[in-house]
Length: 300
Image (cartoon, rainbow, N blue to C red; front, side, top):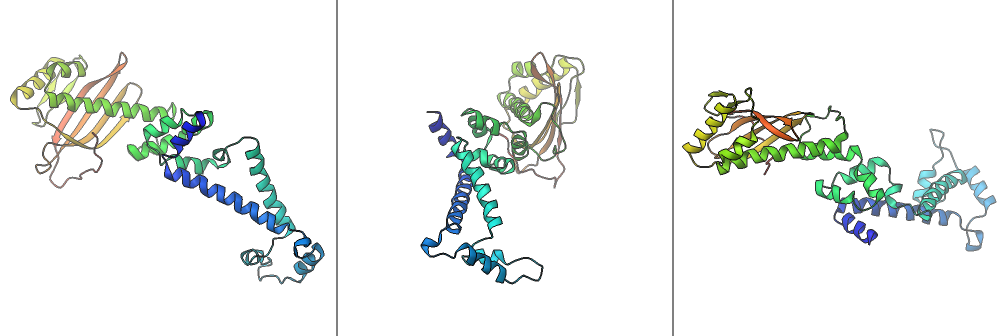
């Protein structure tokens, strides 16, 4: 059952399968080559003494190396030393297979990381639940760093997360969800939900698109009450979202659109972590200048 489930996960990722197939073909090609080069003279091949004479008569290239590569390409055989090296490499692979090691274990870490980079967040999580080998591969920090840069931003390439890239990915994803909740509250025009979304503190601040600054929890809540009473709920389109998450503080920048033909707004939300959850402590919205850069990433 565990093997069948592992296969079902792997089959969902075509690039990963291609990597495995290429590895298998390389192994069988090497094994076939060794078999051909070690045929006995019972099948009509040259004897060892004949091989020695052929090697002695073989001309040298201008750089002092023999033309072994050309000989191999034309169906010839390699020198005994090269044959031994290839046989040693194949023997290592064969020994690994005989000992129960999977093809994943035969891949170098860079190839494994590259293959896993084609998976999305949910697929990588499911892969980690199949068996111990897949869990180790799916928890590799480089794989999560690549996924973070693919899903979020390349701006934080120099960041070194204290608890690793997997934890940092999860924290950023959670912050994105919290930020999405902010826009859902605006769409629903829920003053009650907005009051629970903000931290009840005298230093919180809010700057709406009008440019008016509201300072303190009561003033901020009144500003949202007035905004909800003034018009209908707004369904923003949110683009170019960028989040930076620290231990107890995070900020999110984005561009928002009410109508794609009427320009956009630059928005910044700053959050603080209290009692196990994130609270909004600062919101700033301003109209983006005409001709401003329009991001391509849409966050739903």
